[in-house]
Length: 240
Image 1 (cartoon, rainbow, N blue to C red):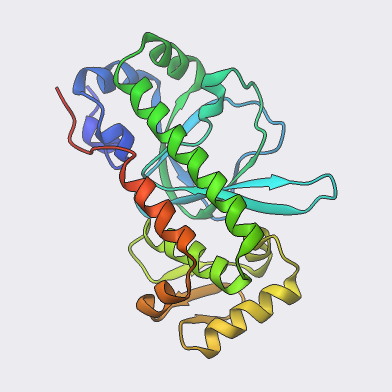
Image 2: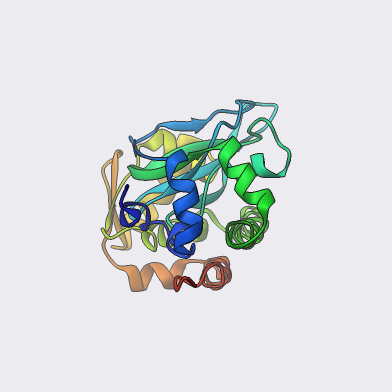
């Protein structure tokens, strides 16, 4: 019998009772998520639900008719990617891009849907996470409208840093432009401001957080609002 512990790095899976995870195990597999991999492209069929493990971050990206890409949310081991397939969406309305590479557990959509419709712990956890994700997307929309590029970048770096165990993030300039929804020239100015302030170091492909406390001072209030919501997603203590 497969060991359940290998699927417990994700907080949603960690919170599932043993009997529920046991039912899902035959349909689950561990996968490697390389940097920049697209789990779902715009309009692509939602075939699986991915549960990122520790130190893995996936960005949710929207695209305008003018082909401008902007990140609207991110997901680490607190949540799951592809869950709109459980609510009747056959295809992805967002691009799901691996921002920080790592690993994940995934389950095919048919098996996930059957367990979800059964009701119980999996449905409850995913609905709670979906509520958190909706709040995060709404907060990001507000942030993109009223806050400066420096505040937004600080918020994004903190949210990413909360999900990983290192101060270094693989961050090519093209990806950073997507995350901020800004042209490369504007991104260079923004990273330059934070670099001059001694908060980060950035070489165009890898970003290092040098002073988290100062980064928290620069970040807008949206970071704290999103973090408070994140803490309410799941109680990692499962009930058997």
